[in-house]
Structures are given as C-alpha cells and as structure tokens.
Image (cartoon, rainbow, N blue to C red):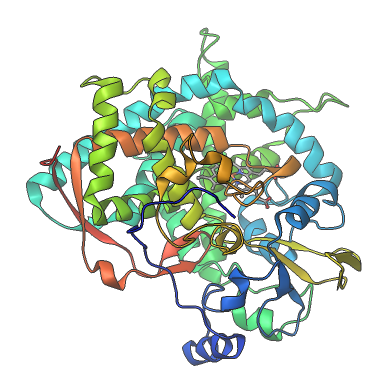
Length: 470
Ligand code: HEM
C-alpha cells in the first residue's frame, strides 16, 4: 500500500455502480443484454482471484499482479487468446498479430516489430503534427459556430487520420480511407465482443454470432484496405525516390520471414494493416475521449498543463524532443489510461486444466485479466477511483505496485504501438489544451461501458471556446 499521501479533495470521474453478482445478472436480463462492466461485482475490486458473476461457462477474474504476470509471460501457451474475442475480430483482421497464437503469432511479431522502430516514430511525428494542425483548424470553426459536437467521434476521426497518414501516407478524407473509417464506425458500434447472454448461457468454445451489418462492414473495410495496399505498392514501383511511401505499410510489405524469406501475402497484409487500423486508432481515441472529458470537468488540470507547456515550449509548435519534457501532460494521459484503460478486459482461455494461485482452472474456462479492475483495486491503489495524475510523478512513482498498471498489457504480447500511442496522445492533449477550453454537456449522465474499448454509454457532447483562463 502506498506510503505518501495524495491531496485530500480529488475529483472522482464517472464509473458504473457495482452490483452483487445476482443484481448484475438481473440488470442484464432486464436490459436484454448489457456489458461486462454492468456485471462487475464489488468483490472484483477486492479479491486477488475469484469467479466473475453467474455463467454456464466458468469465468475467473485474476487481479494479483504476480499471477497476471505468469499468465501473460510464462504460460502464454496454456492461456492463449480467448475464442470469443477471436470470433469477434477475425472477420475483420483474419488470423493476424492481435488474435493469432503460437508459431503463427511468433512469425508475425518478428516480421512486424521493425515497423515500430524509433526511426519510424520520429518520422511519424511529422504526420501526427499535420493531422493535429488540421484538427485545430476544424476546432477553430467549432469555436466560431458554437455548435456542440461528439467528443467520441472527433477523437476517433483525429486518431484514424493519424493512422492513415502514418500507415498509408494518405488523408482520412481520401476515398478509400474515408470508407474504411465509416465502415469501422459501424463495426465498432455493433460488434458483439463478449455478448453477455452468450457468456451466461452459451457453451465454452461456441461462437458468438455476428450480425449481417457487422459482417458487411468487415467486407467493405477489407476491400478498401486492399485498395490502399495496392496504391502503396504502385507508389513504390512508380517512383525513383527511395523514400517514396516511407510509411508503416511499406515497412510491413518489406518484412521477410526469418526462416524462408517469404513476404506477407496480399491477404496477410490486409490482416496485419487492418490490425494497425483497429488497434492503432480505436484504443487511443477511447482514452483521449475520457482525458478531454476530465479536463473539461476540471479546469485546474488544464491550467497546470498550460503552465508546463508555456515553461517548456513557449509559443512555438511542440517538437518531438519536447514530448519528454511535458511530464505533467503525460501523467494526465497515464492517469486517464489507469481509470479508463481502452482494453477494459484482456481475456484468455485455459487451453488445459491447470492451477493458478492454488485454484483449479478448468479447461475452457475464461480467464479475465481486467485492467479496469486491477487499476481500481483497493489493495494496489490509494483512493483508487480518484483522478490523481501526480501518482506518476517522480516523487510518488516509487509507491506504484509493480504489475498493477498494465494498460498496454505485458510480456511478449505487450502492445506493439505503446510508444506511438504515448507520443501521439501527449502531443494531441498539449496542442488542444493550450488553445481551447472544452465544455461537456450532461456530464452527470456520462457512464462508461465496455464495448470493443471502454467507451461512454452515450456519446459525450462538447462545445469548445478559445482558451480564456491561463
Ligand atoms: C492508448 C493506446 C493503446 C492501448 C491502451 C493499447 C493496448 C494494447 C494491449 C492491452 C495489447 C495487448 C492485448 C493482449 O495481450 O491480448 C495491445 C496489443 C497490440 N497493440 Fe496496442 N494499444 C494502444 C495503441 C496501439 C497503437 C497506436 C498501435 C499501432 C499503431 C497498436 C498496436 C497493437 C498491436 C499490433 C498489438 C498486438 C501485439 C501482439 O499480440 O503481439 N496499439 N495493445
């Protein structure tokens, strides 16, 4: 338990009410279905390991950092990716990096890793700056009109734009990229990631059926990704410039298997680049939505960020080298990631009967690693529900419980884009907060739910005004 004391009056942003397992189940039945956060019993934030709600299939929540580490690091073959999550994502991204296991995953990870090297991040930064610049121009118009708009949508649009520019060197407004984004919005709203009624009544290993709407969206996204890939290949072939199309797509196209020297096939490229699009913008958009909501509610956070930006950067544009100096802004992002980890749950399945923490885990059981619960666990955090960015300050960082903070996962399958996401998000937060005040509507009605990522149940509507306060 931490030794230093945080300030007494901290802001507590929205969280769903905990229910007893029986009440959670009744609520879900009453609403027809629901999300897993609705089913989270109060005990989920107290126990080190335990059953999660009532279901026909055994679901075990594992919170203890040491056992979580063992699942995600030492025993990845016993606890592969969960079949329900795979079933939801495979129509979109095939058997690609995010969902594959075993030798297939090892080969893909080896081939994709160099695409995320430091050199490429510094190059990607210029594309991030341009996308943020266009977003600022769009927000200037919103200031003029005074019209409210969806914070969720605007963050998804911005982060998708960054992914399109860095992966394909194209703008989100271009034909194919726009179609991918629009179809992805349909996918995100309607995909059944973990359908509760299925969890409760379905057999282990049985598939969650997806609606035709979702399957059609996947077909459209894959067709358009194919076009973007063909455009990248053509740009490379038709140019004398060796740096032409120097983007993440090209790095993945140039990747070769270490054993047989084979490149990814066109279908595999669609799978892998589909993951970059999915994992690379939806996650960041989710947490930025929460970060801007909190900033809108607490002007004193914006004030501290502005003071830091002024001291470290002054009035010029934020450069790559400045990002590491914006310590408080980064800590605001890290704390938003703690309270609203985009991957609410990181589910695994027990491929064989085994034991964990002295408890028998039956073959087929769902093993839930829930960053949502671990990040709010009363054994590991002081005032777990309070927003306190200074937890991550140099003075207090020593109080953090090792392994109790895992928004990017851990072990060999740790997020490949974590550095990318940290840099991009710090830039976005700092460039927008230094210029605008955000004002959220109906803040008291905002409730988080677990969809593909942690999202507000209803879109958060905001207005922006030109910054007035220091
Ligand atoms: C705040 C933003 C992000 C968060 C919170 C996040 C979180 C995660 C987590 C928790 C995992 C591990 C999942 C598991 O173990 O089952 C993961 C994997 C992955 N992420 Fe991210 N991610 C973010 C941004 C990104 C970005 C920007 C990219 C790419 C540009 C990316 C690409 C990937 C890929 C390719 C994997 C699969 C790695 C593997 O299984 O080998 N992510 N992410």
